[in-house]
Amino acid sequence: MKKNYLLTPGPTPLPPEVCEALARPIIHHRTPQFQEILKEAHAGLKEIFQTKNEVFILASSGTGGMEAAVANFLSPQDTVITVEAGKFGERWTEICQAYGINCDVIKVEWGKAADAEEIKSKIQNSKSKIKAVFTTLCETSTGVATDIKAIGEVVKDSGAILVVDAISGLGAIDLKTDEWFCDLVVSGSQKGLMLPPGLAFISVSPKAWKIAESAKCPKYYFDLKEAKKAYEKTDTPWTPAIGLIIALNEAIKLMQKDGLEQIFARHRKMADATRAAMKALSLELFAPTAYSDVVTAVKVPAGIDGEKLVKTMRDTYGVTIAGGQAELKGKVFRIAHMGYIGEFDIITGISCLEKVLAQMGYSFKMGAGVAAAQAVFLKI
Ligand SMILES: Cc1ncc(COP(=O)(O)O)c(C=O)c1O
Image (cartoon, rainbow, N blue to C red):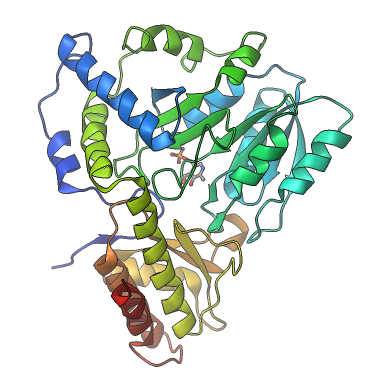
């Protein structure tokens, strides 16, 4: 028998309440029953996004939400700033370029966080008017968290809209959409929200709606004006992902029971425990100063085959962590501590990591990582 443990930064494990909701018989979406469900989902999402703005639910993975953020608010030949601190920051540039938008790219060394002052100076010194600034709350490829609050302060009076990819991070670490002047916040279902993949979410500020009036990029499925018309009648323009939205309400109820502050504190503790374990194993964090409480990226030690490490943990022992992406392939491994991942999942993950590292010849004191994580968990 092999038991499976999922410690990846999306998808994340599903709580039993969510699994039960996913197993319910389907209902039709143009009914008062579904309208009640949708109303509840809209209200719950506003709480999680910490916003008074509408939060739209799209039937796509998170990238669909990113595409909606570009297509609805910009025109070809517009100039925007994209912050690239990893693979997902690069995705903003790729989507914008696909729509003929000029990107003034801020390249941040992988493992470091974007600097609000650099964004400020880029906005001030750009030859063209900057229409939008594209950022990433948690750069999942490097494990880095971005100071969105500081970026909000520099973007708010610039005329540009602030766009945040919170696909990994929302519902795990703090993001005050309204208080931090975030105009568009995009998220997805398969991370902090403890659902399967298949839903994207996007919140839209009044400032962004104003810009949308003159936006000329083509769109159809992701036309948020259509979504807004439907939203006002508690409806959706196309067939919604009914089952996932029903399950979303169960996930929201679980999150409401804990409260956002408690959720953030839990993520912090699990991240602290993971980081302490890595230190005790003499393993180096990939982002030693800008780390997130969502996912921890760790450098593969010299002499160890990083891809084999991840593969052995998964295929031999059923513990799935993530390897490195793009230029970090084989160089880092990533342990997620997000959503429905608890203390003992982390302990299991660390103990499996120790076992495989020992088998691969890495020299360390067996149990040191587990003991360090337990020490963090034992503190109140
Ligand atoms: C920060 C970030 N942005 C974007 C994405 C892409 O989301 P999806 O794969 O749901 O389209 C991911 C997924 O891993 C992510 O972590």
